[in-house]
Length: 407
Ligand SMILES: *Cc1c(COP(=O)(O)O)cnc(C)c1O
Image (cartoon, rainbow, N blue to C red; front, side):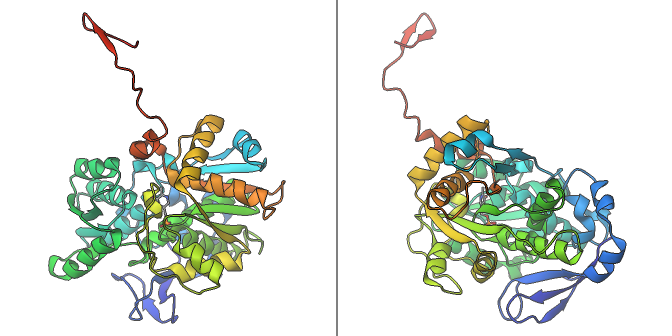
């Protein structure tokens, strides 16, 4: 069973009932889901959670689904938290661990959010989902829609990583490639959704992807024995993960399962698209649209996030910071990460390794701080980006009787 009680506008606090289809609040802001944690505190136990399934649905009492028979699952969540001593030594931060979200279905943590949103839609009788996506959200939506036998309508920039396009086509989604940015794709979905009867699952335009991503924070606490590390590095695009994790920590404290200690939340962006970093440095409450956004870390290519004010608030309340790294730095850090730990991570995750090195060098983090990097996806989905590290051998091969021999 779920302890869901209601939803509220993240700006005005206006209440909305649970059990209905919702997108943005009437004020145009993301909605947040609330639970009756007073009651949960007296009824729900850590032991019960610990005895649950080895997926994010072990946290079902803190998720919005009313009937678990409506869950659409591919086994998402409960990803490994890996000690990373060799990478830690290389970047000056020995007490380092990596949460390997690349182990999720479709190879990224987007699976968590979409599993929650498609499950909720399924429960509420939705049959058509639509989303603009710079890549991995599309793959996850396409997979979960296919898993449920429902329709996915996807709008992606023409230059998305090839893997994302092929995945969506394999899952039978309706895919439109757009000459433009993710914001242009979003406009198309917004214009057409009413006439087409689509449930718009755009980042933060519906309340449930946050709930799915929240489980990253719940898991971190559980895997550390119901406590939190000193710092969390999170590659920030739309910011759903940071918002979700920050919410998770609050809910766990209100359940009495963790103390009030919070990790420093460190939002990592790419130098070619760093609106949150700029706003953080300027002391602004929200960000401005980033012109000519460009980075190989496609999940970070979000020029303006709807929930930017929530991300900035979490970063500041936690005593964290926001950091940008160049594509060159992040690709190099990704190679070091892979070689040191055997983990081939997405460029977004590699950006966190580069940022951690920077912050240790600057003394923002202590040498013995316990640090966790969210590796939000697998590197295998970005072969075009990684291939730039390995230019093809210019030497022509020799062909001899059908044998190809390197010279
Ligand atoms: C989408 C994505 C991000 C950014 O996630 P948000 O929670 O929206 O900030 C980071 N890394 C990868 C691999 C992604 O696909």
